[in-house]
Image 1 (spheres, rainbow, N blue to C red):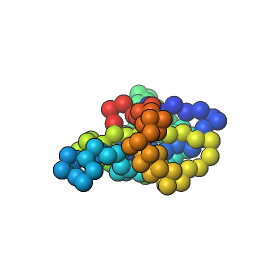
Image 2: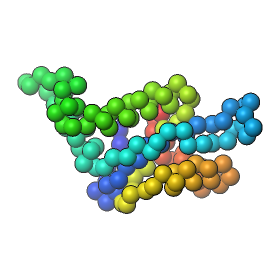
Image 3: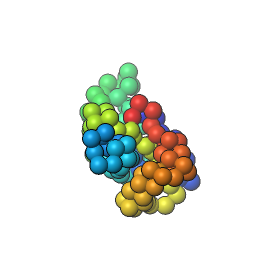
Image 4: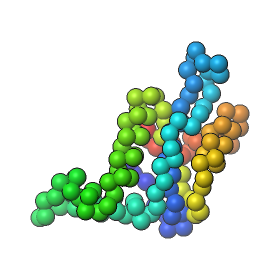
Length: 132
């Protein structure tokens, strides 16, 4: 998963969006299933540094040790488990960046409004993480 990092947008969020099944009261309705997982540009830098360290041929370091050294264990775990769970539950993952913190209710609103608003649906479509 590769994320765009912009210094003007230091706050990042990943959410999982599900679709209600055909036997549900409102089949086909989108809903917020997971998240948000919150992180910053600084956290992205730590993950990138851990990746570089784990690939270093001179100073051989396992992925687990590199992640621990750079202090990004919780973030990696959260995103990894969300990715697996979303795959199993046929959900999509979406990445949002912002110049300011966003609360949980905003994401619920975006997803709920996407059920009847083309602009919110486009926002979800454009934020979708490929493979997620």
